[in-house]
Image 1: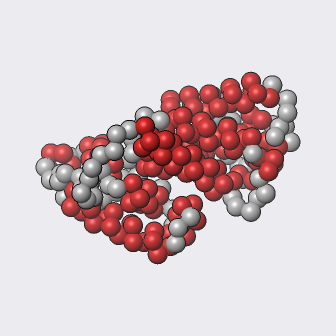
Image 2: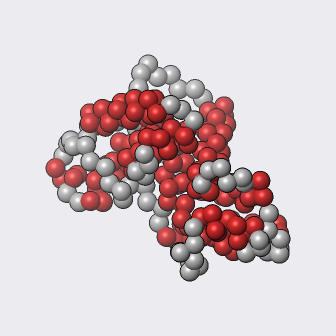
Length: 218
């Protein structure tokens, strides 16, 4: 990883604009974990997350010239990811048979003490339970409880009211309480591990270098 941890996101963006294309890696590595969790929450599984993230970063890089700085770079890129993920989810629904559902999907109860014996097992249980939440609740829950975004930031990213964020979070917690023997959230849930982070970052940089020859910034 590039040794530019002291640079702010805004400084990284400005230097990429001036031609230091490889510095875009710094932004990607800072955002990979958060964006992975948010995109996965929207899609409901892991199948197409990497494709959406790659699309997000390439779109963000292409749009750096138009980035006005009215929001933080991380917020701007997160919005691109959210829009891309919802677009992918809509395409999925058009291609898949419609499933009839009379009500919300509530994850099955998990109460065995043996299943809660280790932190890893707990993370796996939480991931399954969170995956079972309705999409709107799952996205808010991951952003608020797993990524620790505040209500205002979550509302801004999702373009909904803070009140709606609080309502969805309350309902998500209620559903999870019915699914788990205790209400515990692990920051180890939905980890975007280093090899995968490296692969995604390398793929995006490869596309950027092919498109620009690494000579021209946006």
